[in-house]
Image 1 (spheres, one colour):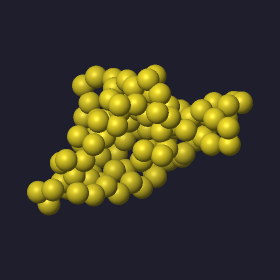
Image 2 (cartoon, rainbow, N blue to C red; image 1 turned 180 degrees about the horizontal axis):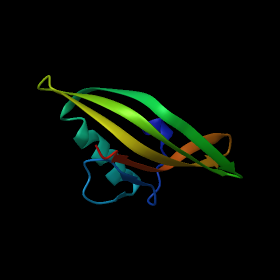
Image 3 (tube, rainbow, N blue to C red; image 1 turned 90 degrees about the horizontal axis):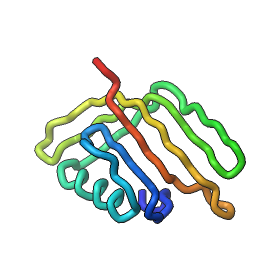
Length: 106
């Protein structure tokens, strides 16, 4: 995922298990790396969307995805999530600057 992200101090991320907002590329990268110490695989299936809007050099995408995480213990977690991603166009490349995912209430 590293090539998808802008490596800036103002990027941010909130994942379903987070208890705070992660800000800055180093912190976001660390957050993802820490999460993967518990998981052996992730399969994401889009359930709704993505709904994409482009305004100049900024774009955002919203949708609902179903994430199936396999823990290193072998157990699986199924987590339907609302997702919002914000991208900035830099040169010819779109880079992720914000990712927010929260579980859909069951």
